[in-house]
Length: 133
Image (tube, rainbow, N blue to C red; front, side):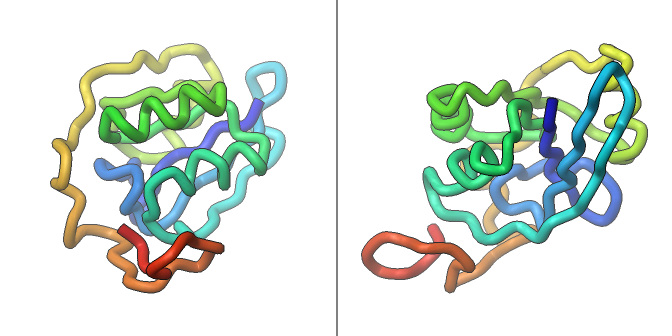
């Protein structure tokens, strides 16, 4: 199973779409078999669910995420776990041991603006306008 954790300097980011990076972790039989950190390619509505699904991610862990984004992940059969905070390594261990429970999103709609990735040009193919939103 692959999980993606919204990451900001070694901690779980409160703002999923605007986090600076993602920690992608592959877990088999309760053990981490691979872990990598990738830069957030940009915040563009609807892009990240497909981007992460193509990488085999089946679970997202974050401090918070809007309802629309949660719905888009659900459409890709990706489970979202919200309300998580703390050190990424501790969260990975807790997830692998089955001790993570989803809670309320830690951020409110629009709260991520000005935080983390605030790009005007995305690093991925985009629709008309060419700007992240």
